[in-house]
Amino acid sequence: MNRNTDQERWELPRCVNARGDPFIDNFNMSLAQPHARSVRLNGLATCLRLEEVYWNILSEMARFNDCSINAVLSYVDREVHLRYGGVKNFSGLIRVVCVAHILSAEGLRLTPSPT
Image (cartoon, rainbow, N blue to C red; front, top):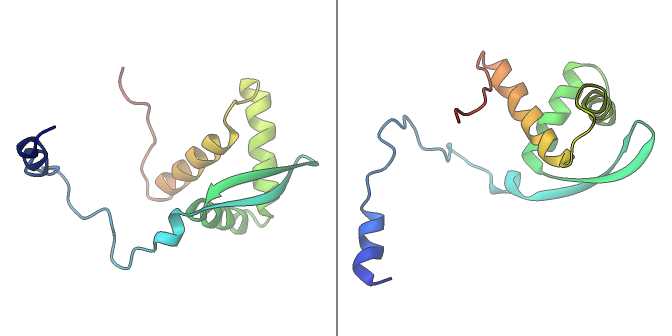
């Protein structure tokens, strides 16, 4: 790539409909750091690696349901097996569950993208 192309890329218009900087005031980069924890899913010990922000959301979900993070994770694990026969990427599922939880709390819905 030549230098002009690089410069042109930076001059592309930003998201026209964006209403705010995604880096909120006092953004804490440590929330994006992955953190592995040993957890028990329905009695089986395993390790789950998630970014710190997701552990924080799971903690809030557990507090809201008056249970432990392990209980929340075990519930999701059990339900995904019962309803869908399992999932290949459990960490990805937990991230989506966390985002869906936050969206639901804000009165928003998580919908599939149009194909």
